[in-house]
Amino acid sequence: MNVKHLRPASPAIPASKDRANSRERNPLRALSWAVYLFIAFSVGRVLNIVPALSSLPLVKILLVYIAFALIAHWKALPELITPANPAVKWWIAFVLWIGLSITYSIWLSSSGRFVVLELPVLCALVLVICKLSGDWESLRNLFFALFCAALVLVVASLRTYSGGRLDVQTLGDTNELAYMFDGVIPIALAFGITAASKRRRLVFFGAVATMALAVVLTGSRGGEFGLFAVMAFVLLAPATLRQRQGEADRLTRAPKRRMGLVGRLVIWTAVFTLIGMVVWPHLPQEPRERLASILSLGSDYNMNTRVGRLQIWKRGLHALADRPIGYGIATYPMVDWKNGGLFYTAHNILVLVLVELGPIGLLIYLGMLLHLWRGLAKIRRKLDQLAAPSEQHRQQAVFCRMSQASLVGNFVAGQFLSATYYYGHWATIGLAMALIALVNRERAEPSLEPNRVLKL
Image (cartoon, rainbow, N blue to C red; front, side, top):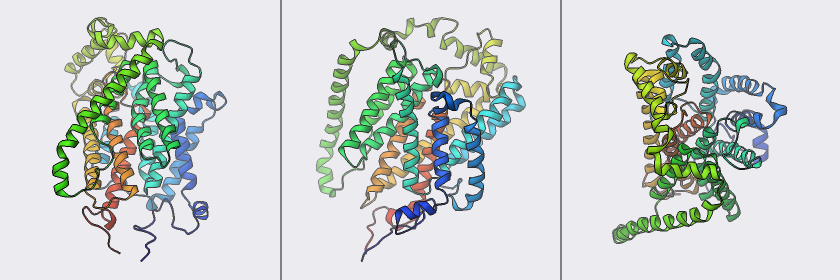
């Protein structure tokens, strides 16, 4: 018996014999392209790269169109809140707590500006990603849109590079650029691992190497720590599903697999050491000095000066002791100034949330990240238990693991950056939520029941 569909067609892509005609009749095609452009404008900063577009209100126009399109097709799109995906509830709680913080803000104008101008864009970014993930093809396209946004940034930044630290003033903060690459490098790796041809694999792996080089050239030590964390996690945690074999064979091969992990660590350590020895002498002086300073942080300005991160954190935590409820969203520079600082932001995602939103805000934020991590781990275990996983299941497993790597890289880099509300960070959160929701929807179908082979 020939089976054409193992599951019903997604509302995002109507079923049809003719794929071209199906796309023409797809009512969500225009919305999908609007979301791709929205990701390019908000995350990839295309409007800053092209001066002729910078004066046009394209982001506002896209937001209005996306809002009306979502309302028109809301019932046909996947549900946002599901019992199997608690991370969404924690995200909503975090957004609500940010909005409520304006009621106790000590700097009402800054808090109001963030809630009115910045927060809606961040929420729209997560919302449209979750609502347009009706099937794996749609979600993979959203991952690809984020990859393309990062690729535009790295090309635009390296094109004008002339030595020293990578200067991207027109594209945003240098540290933000490194932070974004830490989150997108695992996604590029996922595309490379699942590529259908050697040529595509080389393109994606080449993009990974280019983004890693850009992180080094930015001289952002937080970005470099995040890059090291991503590399370590990718080496220690397998991305692909395990090979199927008999129980007896599995027991006999277990020691070899453990030796294989040690062997991979030794080999890749040697490879990265060799690459470092070749690249190091050719790096510009300033990025090389900043990278070398990681080995002597005790004498770094961040540890012993008024403008260093350690003193900024101490002033913020000292201020929190006087007002445990927090000071309101987007108020950290004012808190720093009132406590003897120079109007600096926190340069740490946890300290930033704790001081501005209080312990409750920090617990909600950490709860959201924890449920994202647990949700990705849970659905990957379900995929790994399949008796006969398809190519789509294998791709989903790879993206689950690499989404975890993105969270690791962003969290580690965020200990030195005020990255809580970076667009790239929220795009990664939205993609992780969407991936968890998609696999959970498919689990109820026969093709995804663990340890069961579909008999025809």
